[in-house]
Length: 186
Image (tube, rainbow, N blue to C red; front, side, top):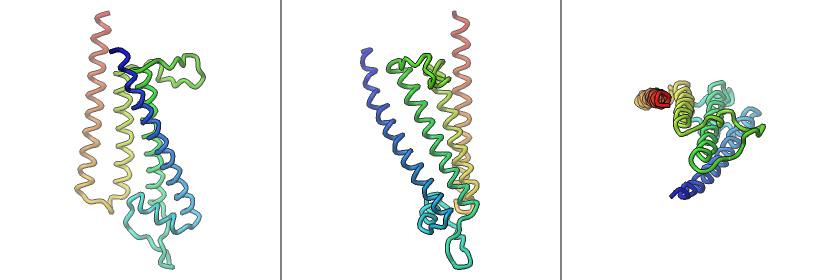
């Protein structure tokens, strides 16, 4: 039974592949942003479509024009990709270390500091806070682009974000109660 933990290895390898997809997505969007900044109309159209900006901002010649809102939405999209990528790293490294096998990184100069004290409980709290950060970025993008988003979507995204906040607080409180009880037992 103990060796069944190795069945999780393909799952973590799959997450590493997903990380690769996020790297490709990041570079694709960054290239579109840079090309749009240098006047490439097709890159600008792709960028506007990817950020969900529906208002046509036209210059004197009747062409789509890059503006601060589009740049901000694109940059927030890049930050979102990075935060999700960080979440993947926490799950891959922390999950493997906690549930499959030790990585034997003690003393390695690149060892993440959080890995020293990772366990299932700490991992849950870290994941919950990372999800709140990602949700915050999505909510900020929604509010910046509020003119192009239905009111119902705005309300539901806010409710879901608040639910994430309460869930994270509940996880942290439960963790604190459980770790406090185990400290009293020892």
